[in-house]
Each structure stands twice: as C-alpha cells, then as structure tokens.
Length: 164
Image 1 (spheres, rainbow, N blue to C red):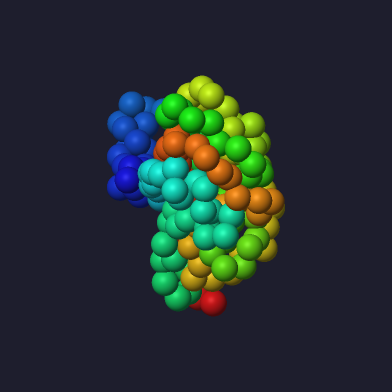
Image 2: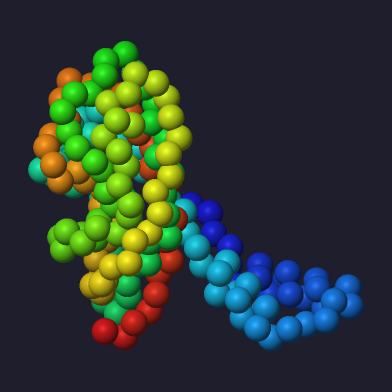
C-alpha cells in the first residue's frame, strides 16, 4: 500500500515557502484535498476467483469501520494471460460490498477473454454510498469459464469519516 500522507503534503508546502513561492490558500487546499490520503491496494485474482466472481464477488478493500465510507478513485487491471482463454462472462465492475452499487466504469468482457496481456484502467462513476462497506469486484452478467489467467487489480481509494 502506498499513499501520500498529510505530513508529506505539509513538507511540499513548506518547501514552497522556503523557496519564496507566493502561497495561495486555494492552491494549498486543493493540493491537500487532491493528494492527501489516497491509498492504493493490490489484489491478485486467481483464475478460480475470476470464474467464480459472478456469484461470489471478490473483496478488494475491506470496510473501514462504523462512521466511515470508502471513496473509490480508480483502478488498473493488470491482466496476465496464461495459456487458456476465458469464455463466457460479462463486463467487470467494482462495486460496493453487499449493496451492488456500481462504483466504476466497466472493464469490457473482451479484456478478460483475450489471449494477451493487458493493462486497463477504470474510473469512478457517480454513486450513492453507504457507510462501513468495502469494495468488491464482480461481473453481473454470467460466469467466466475455462481460463487459466490471473488479474492483478490496483485499486485507489480514500477513506472519509462521515459520523453516520
């Protein structure tokens, strides 16, 4: 896991101050908001995970506790082709745990069915979030079959304290 902490942002701002760059409170606020506390986790999906995720979504990020919500930022799918292509299946999405709310754009079924390695990103979509829920990956259409490839998912997110 890698993330930019508030301390690192403060060090950047301090460096600007030492170099005589005029400070602008809006720029500092935007920098802090945009870069602070983005976390990145990597989860490897086995062929068995990919085949089963239609009926058994796979956890990417565990819920962070009462009074918090996970804000999905984006993800990169690193598809590592094995020797046998997947068949069937459907578009893959990242969703909120148990609610089924899609949080990402779709990863096309063709990416998972391909006979080649690939790197594909998905981005966040507007969604109503629920407190204390994790992030899962699934495909809602049908199960994949027969393949032997793996996929690493690098998921970026923020944890927000809501008090709800």
